[in-house]
Length: 132
Image 1 (cartoon, helix red, strand yellow):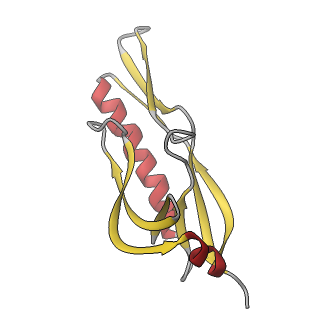
Image 2 (image 1 turned 90 degrees about the horizontal axis):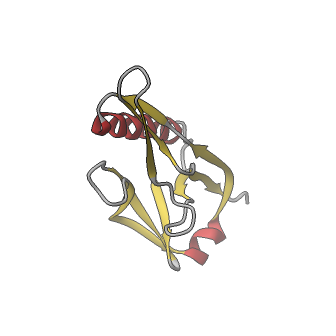
Image 3 (image 1 turned 180 degrees about the vertical axis):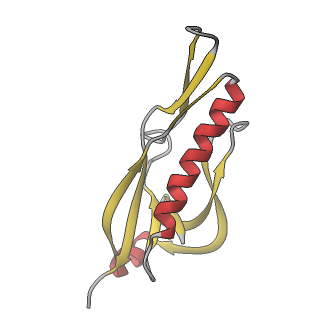
């Protein structure tokens, strides 16, 4: 399950990587599960963190952004698929602090090309049940 902290609660979330949105790298609460932070951290600990960064180049601006977001989603899904039974994947990047945003650069050398990147990595945490 993918989770994210909102205030004093962890909520289950779903990916919402959308090039047309104001925040392209988004997650939305799916209302399937939620815990108070203390309740969750009493039972689980963060085993490790992962960071994802991606880049894509395309002659069309929208194409470059979509390709970059698709690559981000693929990397995210690979980490998620590797979770073991009982583990949770949390979005550790904080909105307004270090949440990644898309940025682009335009090059006209050899024809017009757009390169999209994230301005900072998407940080993820892998949580597992505490021993005992």
